[in-house]
Image: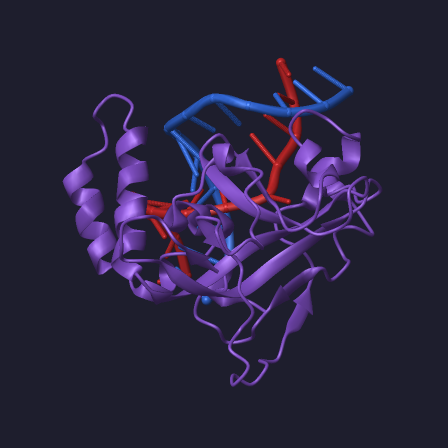
Length: 202
DNA sequence: AGTTGGATGGTCT
DNA sequence: GACCATCCAACTG
């Protein structure tokens, strides 16, 4: 994943954790209610961004994955920074600045905390992925496969060996009930430092 | 290392 | 009016 915001430095990261949400029958998916104003992008063309707000606080980035009419998306849950870690810190700080409601939040303290946050934790977890790359709901619709887009997906360098991938149940969807809570549609690179969850569980 | 609770607002019944 | 595809601080062991 790579951004191309006019001002350097660019931000580049390696996706190490994702979750799949497929079809109208998937009771964990936003598409479970059929097509609505919010989830309409999931019914759109593949390769585009679907960014939504969870828990009133955090935006999350999805990549639409199936042809138009067939709702599916992959949630990006963990990204290992390769370039521009400081730009990611800056993006997270900027977001915190927009959020301080009544000055309770001390921005200097947040800046200090971010400076002590290791690179590998800057985009660990879906809310942090969007924050680190400065993505918000308004970015929904961006073509992530177009090289001219401000943020895009790239294939890993051909020279790199393909890492092992583990499959586990998805996170935070207890409400969906079986079999959706059991199906192993969370995919991660075991041992990668930007995998989310307690102790980066696999 | 694991658990708990608060922040916060859009979406859907 | 309930329910979240979350994160973090502040605990406990």
